[in-house]
Image (cartoon, rainbow, N blue to C red; front, side):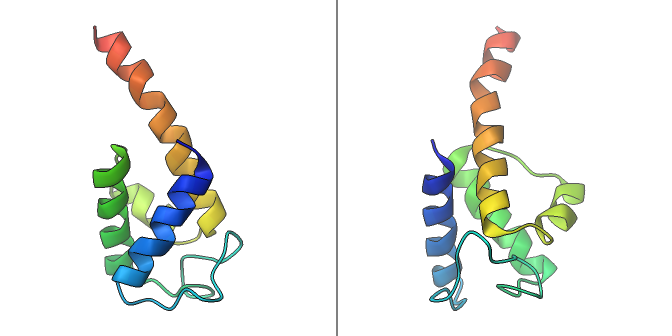
Length: 92
């Protein structure tokens, strides 16, 4: 999976969550100076991404996500998703 795929899914999720995304792109912040997600909305977005891509976020991650751009978020999700097969292989 690519960061572009994650970005497209994230934008679609934001639209489904009733956020305005017409002027939203990779350089848009998730938090107050961009898309304006509050902590509950960031948590909902994280859950949608977890369900779709199999990655996980803990409570500390949620605070960090709010200060990321959409591009940074997409790259982080793609990076975490790449690690999943490695973790599964290590478990045997």
